[in-house]
Image (cartoon, rainbow, N blue to C red; front, side, top):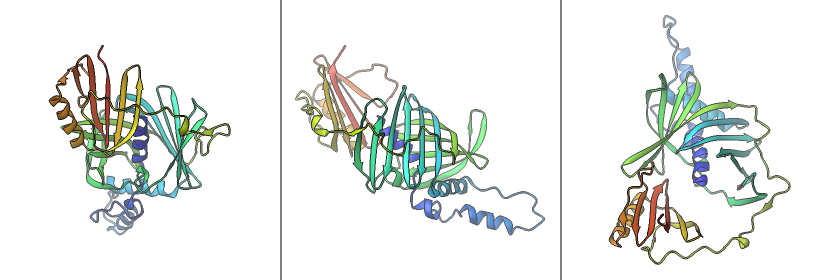
Length: 315
């Protein structure tokens, strides 16, 4: 889940083709064009021209593209209170996440991503690719107004170009970004999280790290315990790529990347055919499928291209 949240933070600041050339929708001019058109209006027009939410979004992305900034959001992200921050200095990007009292960082520089936290003195390295969320393209969906906490805001809705089940709604208070709502469709339901902007400035706090602390060492994958075999009591899950697997005290957990909602739904049908009976255990997240067989409970859910599966004794 933490990996997903870090990606979501990056998605808030997607720098797509639109960042360099506007929204990507010809029907919307850039903020500069709007200003130029406003200056050419007849003098008798006393009402100032107001930039659309799309134009203000363009201006926001243009400012982010210039670099040297600090951006912070706080709110409820899928049931957890989080503080998310991202900053850029001299071409190096740093993101910071704080939740449940834990702080983690991701630093991106020279084509590599370095991830670490403050609990352990190790870091992980991954190669950056064209599919990194920071390079994900978004597309314009709609714009208008919406009421939040008793006040009406101008807003623009954008969707990920590669996965339009994920959308971002940007709410503007005047020229300033007020909040971002992250929406993810999972099956027939939709999960929404609202993050309020608490800072957007050139002043970067000292707790934003742009390098690896001196006493940290690269994590040695050779020391990682062997991944457990998939339980033979379950139908095989053949979709996607195994991203993580663990076992502790007879409880198994498996996470698969590059999957779809259809992959998850098909596996749920296999579980039913294998004799697993669905349970209603009052989970807040509606789209988690839970079922019981022979004293073991299995839980399956899909979110943002990832299918997670757990299998453990029922208690």
